[in-house]
Image 1 (cartoon, helix red, strand yellow):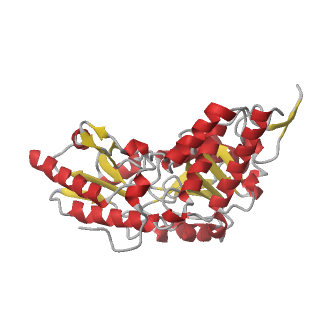
Image 2 (tube, helix red, strand yellow):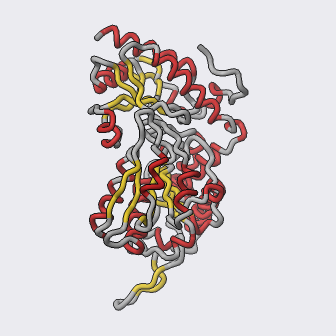
Image 3 (cartoon, one colour):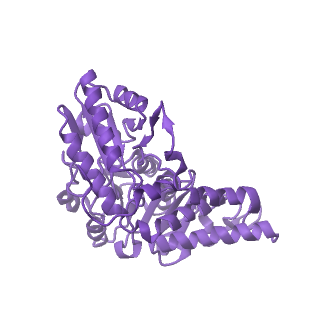
Length: 411
């Protein structure tokens, strides 16, 4: 079986940018299929991070010496890179956080404290990552609000027809994943945003699994908030982005207090800085932001313009292959998917399967995948998840398939 005959980047050449891939694990060539959890970094990102550790490091926005100026300049240039990546209207709408989880918590806390009151409602979906459920539950408990859930069908598709019933005069915000981290479903976020906006309800999009796979235009989508993490899109850990429309960010109170987010401090009262700095208290992870910008620059390489098509072909090949394995069940078969296959094989515990695959040099994710409601929906305790990136190959998919066949025979 081969990849569809389309023009694709030179994958073997691209793989050379990722030094971690060129090694053996347990004596076998590494096949890394856990990209939905954390993707690997190209040498260009590693070099950019190291540059600031070796030659330029200085705290930002706080001094006038050479190192501080150079680092501040690089940090703010990184903000502009991310603005361009999302096509935000202005750089002030780009907030650097420690990841998608912190970004969602920031909105749930800050937006929630200002706009959500007793009796109000928040809508999430049944397929959300815990990071887009728990912060809203905490906020609802704190504010006396109600969390309402848009379910999905066994095929992994949201039951969008029920959204009109859920949206009402009490709804204050809708929070939905761009792409499910378990099912791979690409949700119809444009339609969800449109439906919510007809009733003047803002929408937060969890783009942790969307940003690594395709370009997102937040102005075209007209979403109110969009969040993602650097470590899932070939950048550093501990860095993420919150995009928010100025009309919301200007009104929302700060999430953390401390340096940089202040305008003036007296012992009687503190006034706050303007956005984005109002939400970036303390010394930010400026090296992470600079490294994330390098990852975005890497993804903007014209050679990678067709990576989404290539990744879709990898997913199609893997889906066809795994369906040939008797007793293997794939969870979520939406018409629109991105880079994720979650499954179980009858008679084999997911942890055993993951451990044995690791002995064969193949890295996958096993467990509840930070999505207990999805596990409950299908009545399973755990799943195995293989997730793909553009540096994976058709040959790796074949090796993965043959490994599963071999392990199934063992049981």
